[in-house]
Length: 287
Image (cartoon, rainbow, N blue to C red):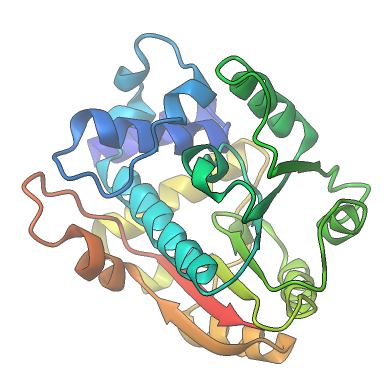
């Protein structure tokens, strides 16, 4: 429990979730055993941390969370690439943060248009970091800044080059925790308005009372840290509830995947003992 307390102290002081998530992906490549579960060679370039970043408590004592972040990234990317293989030509990343999908897949330029939606400050930071390494942004990468206190992501999308008539993949991870249930319902209804044959990949989190041991302690730490930083975690669902709200919104072929599913896919047989903490539930649904 000493490590858990250190994590809590770190997260009280460091509330940049997008940066922290990218650094966990970077740390995975630097200290975990081969083969890597997820290879994000842009993570350090987008974050540009201080020289001692690996010694930060939120890096040093969070191995299960790091595993969860790289497992999540791999699962989502596998789903998106599968959709693209099946003909999807547009990809929306809702709450994009420092995601580097467009930068790591230059081969998709001319085939897939990528729309990253997030806060204006986050996207401005990201654009500056990219321009330090590339002459221009990839032509198929479109930043859609949204001041969520004044507008909705759907309205912003309507004012972009996005083509509502084409099948689309949309991902939203690490976001529903911070949304009201009403906002989540609205998001699902909007996704259901995308073109037929579109696909959604969304992550949810199970209630604390459904977790046990270290997994429960880590979630309690995360909840306290989020509350102290002014971004409280307010919405939790079990797998049955996830399917219920998704079907109610009009989506179909709803499937859920949990930590055990990710372990079977990506973590079995590893020499470093890397294992994700439980609690995240992934929804894959179709329009």
